[in-house]
Figure 1: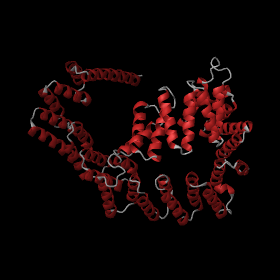
Figure 2 (figure 1 turned 30 degrees about the horizontal axis):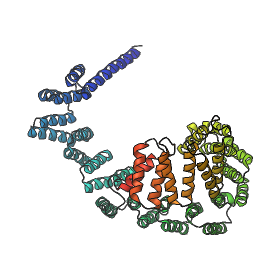
Figure 3 (figure 1 turned 135 degrees about the vertical axis):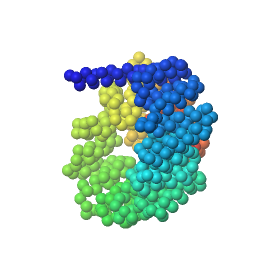
Figure 4 (figure 1 turned 90 degrees about the vertical axis):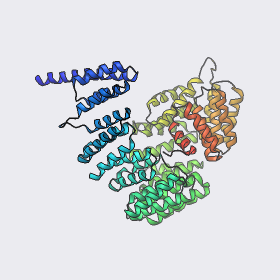
Amino acid sequence: MRLFSSIIAFLFGFTLWSQSYQLGENYFDQGEFEKAQAVFEKLVAQNSRDLRSVQKLVATYQELEKYKLAEDLLLQQNKPKVIYPNLLVSLGHNYQLQDKNEAAQEAFQSAIESVSKNQGYAYSVGRMFQQYALLDWAIKTYEEALKQRANSSFTIELARIYGEKGNLDKMFGSYLDLLVDQPNYLFAVKRNFSDFINEDANNPANKKLQQAILAKNQEKPMLVFNELLSWLYVQQNDFQKAFAQEKALYLRSQKDNIQGFLNLAQQAKDSAYATSQEILNYVIAQEDQIYRILQAEYLKLELNMNRAEPEVTAQLFNQVFEKYQSLPLQDWFDIHLLYADFLLKTKSYAEAKAKLDKLNQLNLDKFAAGQVKMRLGDVAVKTDKYNQALIYYSQVQLDLPNSALAEEATFKIAKTSFYQGDFEWALRQLNVLKTATSKFIANDALQLSVLINTNSNAVLDTTFTALKRFAKADLLAFQEKPNEALALLAKILQEHVGEEIEDDALFKKASLLENLSKFEKAIATYKSILNLTEKSIYIDESLYALARIYELELKDKNKAKAYYEKLLFEHEDSIYFNEARQKYRKLRGDLIK
């Protein structure tokens, strides 16, 4: 009972202290320093070792230019048997405010000497120097602490300060020293380096970093430095040099891991497609573990599907099937599933269904079986067998509840119902997806829901003519019949001018034109959406699409940057915000995150 009473008393006292401290802070922030002084003096009188209140009272005295009171308070805290070195920094700063520079230097030096005796004081002293923007003294603090023994926290603080001061050589050196002792800090180090380097290999910071890594790797060869060099070359889009570093990593680690190669091939696929293929061919030739070889084969086929002519990709698939025909089908299931995707893409629906039916007969886990059934559903929709499609999608829902694949299946049920003109059932499915874990599924569900709700007003259109036409055009697009879809969209845009369906039809038209590589027409259509209304749910997507076309297809960086900028400033809630910010910064040439 006595213990319980003590706890209650402590909590009550802490609550009162918090309320008083917050009141004092509010007065301070509002510039009412006399009132803040009264509050903090009372708190310090109640507990002279309450350093937060002491420091706040010192700051209040300084705002009121009551430097003597601040000095007396700070001196009272540091007595022979009780030392607070960080308050010596505050004392020195107080002297600086009075232009007593000699006294300030003595106080600062005393704080440093405390650190030389006890490394444990380094962080509080260093942070206090940083708080007062006394960066040179903060550097001395951490350097003094590191003389005693290595400490990753101090090395990181030291590197950050060097960066703030623009001393790139020392900053890079400090971070590289950190990696010698703590290679697991590589991700954090890359993130910090990103603030200083860009895609220009001739940028002074890039050059300094490359030289620093090469020198450190020569002094103390470590895999982490090859990995860091590879990362730097990727930022500079020099994928051949990155490939050389990945090979060095691979060979020095006794061929322990191919993930670096796979990641690099993915990163190189757009601007250095030939290099991405060279990387994967190297893995296939060098590896002796079949599952790794198949990983590389899969990625090579996937990249070819998106870049090469269908005949070339088909030939590659046949070569792979012949090479590994002795393997059990289940061991390279992913490649066979990818082949089914290729057959779907090339409208070989009968072959796709035959392949998927064969895969469906295997003893698959639920997730793999779900992937097969999703594609069987897609084949059914593409061949106008909607009820069969709904059965497949529903099976995935039941077999994998609460999974991302189940959410996708739910969305496809909604889309299939939408294609059939069953808008009420489609809306019921879409309502389930309001809390979908995938932001893209949630966004697509929201767009379709808004489309149906805004275009199914029985007062305006009892037959839902425009909505049914749009659903048919959407289906034709899914069935890889873009020209038929565009013809129907043109009819909608001609006969339903000024109706809610107009921006939906324009966006679908623009997307189809973009997929057909008719970029100028796509641009004109996306711009029509921007000019049509500011309330369209497609504004941010149109801005993002315009930026991407100008950046990747037309190579007009200035126009791309302008559209990314408009998206960033006017649509902070867009799902494309983070990606647009990254690309905008890269185009502007300042940061690469």
